[in-house]
Image 1 (cartoon, helix red, strand yellow):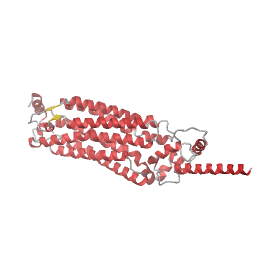
Image 2 (cartoon, one colour):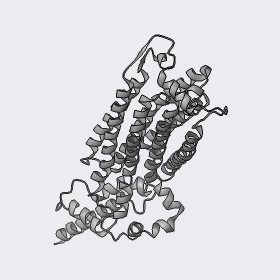
Image 3 (cartoon, helix red, strand yellow):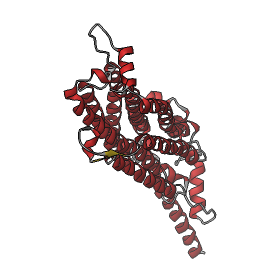
Length: 374
């Protein structure tokens, strides 16, 4: 043992034979965030299958949930083998197994974080109409996130040569500068979190929808807020871990914030997709809101079946208005959020447009008939 480790043992060791452990703290965070994320994804999938259709954003969040469950299982086994105890209280015969579990949870974290970020970006893509100016930037940013997190995952997997040197220091091997790598990963994650935080506001601030709906869509920003807070809070704990002589004790702070970050991100990014189910279960509560009333009455110009929008359709069909992306198309794409899927054909924008076209054709045929008679 080094002198610092001997000093730590003398200062913290107990004489009553009781082993200190922080396992209950980790279990508490798992119990709080794990089931919540699982239920949120299940409700999201049920809502999609019932009211709309599954998309790539749903697949991404399912992948994230699977990786999140794997991370939790690996952490539980690491606790069984000694994680959360002081390093001198970890049995020698279980130390290698604990390190293997810790390595597994490390490797699972970046792809899980990548999947939930991609789910948010794919959801934003899903809400936008074809040809929207933000579609290509979103695709490019999603590709960057995927490449970045894939590179970090591969680097984590190959951080030691040979790989098993990470958990077996009895063999010859080397590891790269792990503290510098972790700081770089944290900095890039914070940068992407800031972008995800800003994107919904930039995209939806000028969208012609009700203020309440706009706030709901901007609520996606809460995912970026929490992940950014988690990354910021984790930085000092990462520094403490790098200089610690008791890593199995101090790594707990990073574990709990990682569990909280992923669990809350999965839950929050699923909330907008669950809205149609909430409206179905609590129709009166949703109908009492201003946006719901205007949706039912069709008297607000921001809705596809409103008078102002029908006028826009007429002017566009008559060639007097050049609108690149009609309002009705934006709302067709937003049907997944509202729950107004193809099954609800009464207020369907396509039906409205078809009716307008039929009305126009009827008018034109009437005019032609009058000319022929004249």
